[in-house]
Amino acid sequence: MNQRLNSSWWALRIGLGVAPFLAGLDKFFNLLTNWKAYLNPLALRVIPVSPETFLHAIGVVEMVVGLAILTRWTRLGSYAASLWLVCIALNLVSMGAFLDVAVRDVLLAVAAFTLARLTEARQASRAASTVPKQGLLRASAS
Image 1 (spheres, rainbow, N blue to C red):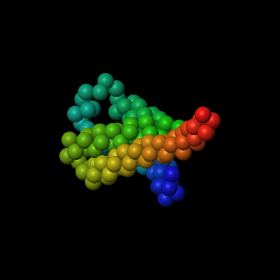
Image 2: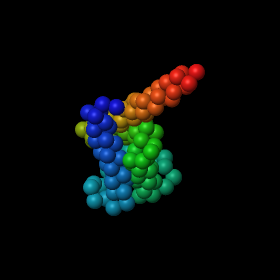
Image 3: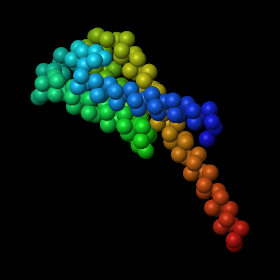
Image 4: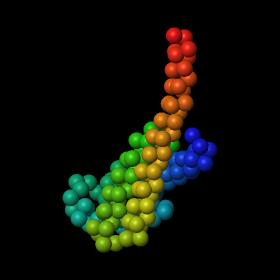
């Protein structure tokens, strides 16, 4: 794979892996923000647990997605992050609040989707670089 694409892949992988992991971890500490403010009041009426418990569950999901992106499940984690971020943006838009954060989350969703696609291209490139060599060896042996 082209070195410039490889460095872009690593930048996206690290950024999109570390950020959700840390945001998820912060759901337990509220150092970055008051996460309850981002919960849709309609959702609070429907969920069967306290807002804190709900946020802790969200935090665990975010940490798992971040770890997936940072490990061998980059593609799957990136698609999950992309979907997750669009859902967060829809939640914020439906509240009519934090629209700036909703726009940011849509852009992050695009970045996560891009990382997933780059990961697919990277894997295909690696597979293609090993398959022809084996094919040539078989052809010359015939």
